[in-house]
Length: 112
Length: 112
DNA sequence: AGTAAACTTAACCACATGGTTAAGTGTTCC
DNA sequence: GGAACACTTAACCATGTGGTTAAGTTTACT
Image 1: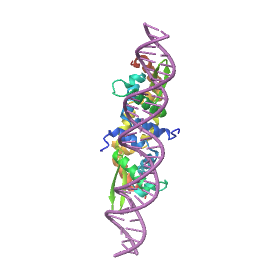
Image 2: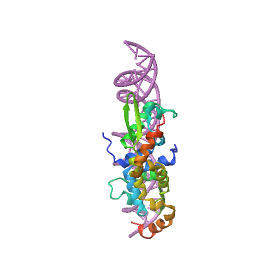
Image 3: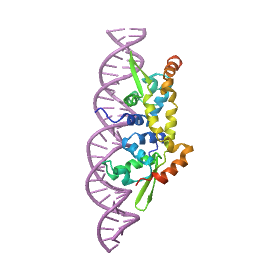
Image 4: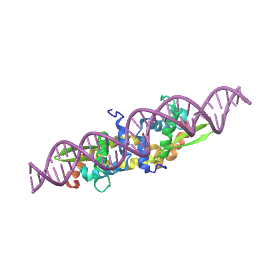
């Protein structure tokens, strides 16, 4: 019930949706209300609510109600974890190291 | 039919599953067969096949059949794009810049 | 008080995901 | 040729996702 998959999974899952990334991009430039986030996109309020729920579950967004308006702001800390995970493999895809990685993989990496 | 969501979405979606990240981790240490990837985890071959399909769709893995064995290897290039996307917000979560970001957000960022 | 704004919840829908088992298909080995 | 291996496909299932509309609820305004 609690959707207990790990934090990293929830972060990547949250970022896997273009609309949600748009929300993150928008919030990076300052806090916004739910309506603000819906504006422009041709999407309903409830849809935004669900995206916000996903982002909050992942810890990427925090929000609080002030009067009848909910103000949402980016937390962005979990992105650091996601970035850190990707960085573990940086050596494999860094252009300068591509050849080296390939070489290592072929010479000693090939675990059976 | 072609599952035409953008590449970045597919990459994040592929990485959103712990089992799939395990596969990536495994492949980072060298190529492996489908059975190799299934070993250890208590999971069926078809399940691995589906994960591989997701990873290949995202371009994270390439594989080719040699005889009756399919050899899978990491491509990892799309991870660079994912990392690059995250880096756009590095300023917001970098510990050294947390205060500055907060300050900027509160003084001029608050778009209405 | 009464209306309007800004969510919020509920109910529903189509489709994707992640897993299963059972039954192929193509290779390799004896 | 025939058995064994290593996938591969098909069929099915439970849940999750992303969206909708319609009907609340809370707060603000006049």
